[in-house]
Length: 74
Image (cartoon, rainbow, N blue to C red; front, side, top):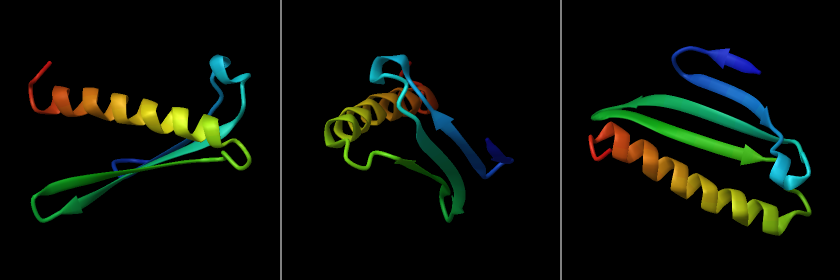
């Protein structure tokens, strides 16, 4: 785990539903002229195209929930 508040969080991800395959998630927050930008890099899917696609779909869902929360839609 790497933590550098308030701009960086990096950790390994090993979900039970993917046979505990280990991947790495890196979340960076950078300032912009109008607020902040969240960049997420989820790596470690070499040779695992379906797993990468499934996780990508999951990130779309999770970031949608985050957006709803931030903008008061939840």
